[in-house]
Amino acid sequence: MAYGQKILKGDAYKRAAIKRRHIRIRKSINGTAERPRLVVTRSNRHIVAQVIDDLKGHTLASASTLDTSIRGAEGDKSTQAKQVGALVAERAKAAGVEAVVFDRGGNQYAGRIAALADAAREAGLKF
Image (cartoon, rainbow, N blue to C red):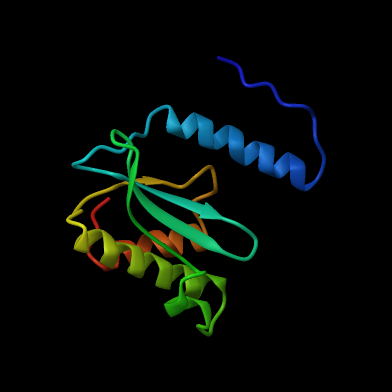
């Protein structure tokens, strides 16, 4: 199935490219009760991570830079992404989740996305 996009410029082009990649990724990645999906949403200022069971359509755990424990934290955006990764892994383990499928949301696996994933792995979440 083709997903047509207008030819855009600047930031609109970039967002459309991310959307196309995310659609392509989601064709093969699904979250189940045994291995829910860890989806990462990134904006220019914030990052959000959610552990989602796609079969039920429920969010099992979530964390973001808007949480009160991280919001006033010092450091750059990569440091904050590491804190979000550790926090979402802690909350997922408290919800009984041991392993997840990583969904980078169409973003490149570099920078803040990689920092979040590495911190979640270090906190004991299996990918």
